[in-house]
Length: 342
Image (cartoon, rainbow, N blue to C red):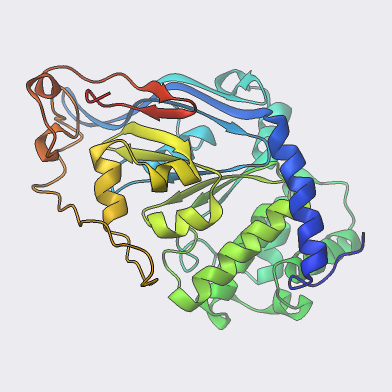
């Protein structure tokens, strides 16, 4: 089927059906098991950015990872891409432990298969390079046998895919708007034909009017190319529109994980309930849930609470919560939560 405009409903329906077939197969692309990432910040002091989380991402899905700033979301994204080395635990990509990927050829292949779209489209692009050179940089490293003409054709095609003109390749980042720069970041990630992309808050620095355009573009590219996303955000309402399953993080821990609908219709963890209660409701026919106000501040990841990390701010806190860390377990089918209430 020929490439059609984004607004061709028949074509979009076809892509969605084909993509759903991929999702139904439930092939594990990325498997994270008891991942920990600590940063040494002083003599005998570790900042526990990620403190033992486990999850799987299936081929073709968008796995949303949400939580407050500083909860460890971005650290997870950078660790699964080997930008950071894990302190403990394992990350398997296509069944292979990424720590075992050592020779140059295999490392280069992994980096081509797993890319990242960064949060800030202003600082993630080199201001001294043209847009064409920024996209071509990866092609030069990963496809050394590609001719100059082939590279230019590839760059022009990528620019068109993300909704820009080939002429944008001759411009510099400062000549583009924030939304256009983020489209360049997406084109750069797509240049190496990856299977997996970490989207690290890709819309948080953009105007609200542009955010929906970027999310729609990411959806379209996923359906067209069979991409798999780890979508990191602090905005639950936006994650709801793009994610198949969602994991909620708090202070380096995964506190709840389930599919999109279950999380929003039946949140189990008190922290998730508080986050969802804060989402604005614009439809007057939808009953607004009671707003749950969290008291106190997020504890320090250098000196986290002894028991449940959320205990100091939880309105359901029990004595056991202050002394024993809850297990992350499946309390309903495909619904995981770390809470002593269950």
